[in-house]
Amino acid sequence: MKITIRGAKPADILYLREMLYEAVYWRAIAQGSAPSFDDGMAAPGVSAALSDWAGRSGDTGVIATDGSVPVGACWYRFHTKANAIRGFIDEATPVIVIAVSVSYRKQGIGSMLLDALLHEAKRQKLERVSLMVSQNNNAIYLYRKLGFEEHEIVGDSLLMVRTV
Image 1 (cartoon, one colour):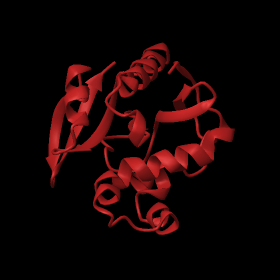
Image 2 (cartoon, helix red, strand yellow):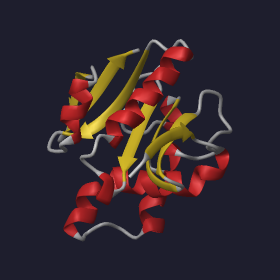
Image 3 (cartoon, one colour):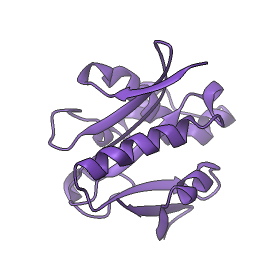
Image 4 (cartoon, helix red, strand yellow):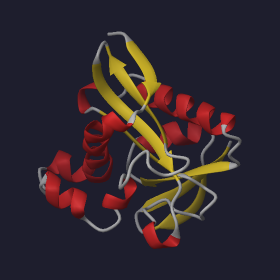
């Protein structure tokens, strides 16, 4: 396995949509109760995560590949109150979405993706980024390790923020 990280391109939209579905419905997928892909992606708040991807200022993402096969993705974008997704704090703080393919989890790929994305955020001189994670998702340990701090409890999830 040789994992490399590259920038996301507009042509990656189909893969980003697959990873968004994984990120949002990870628990339901594991339990066999996830909505169909089309229904899940049409849900309020989900479709806004990638609508007009790479067409808005600040859209930034990275893709992990094993050879030429994509195995994970991480991106951020700015939202407004009108098109907010889970993780939204304000219009100056982009929201991160991250997912790694099931068979590649727990191998450090999420950390590689976030490191690369945070490097881009620093290069773009962003002040902070945010993300939302379920409190029982093991990824929360990675986020804490990488400097994300709890900002607010929202239902069974944590809104986390990291200064860039």
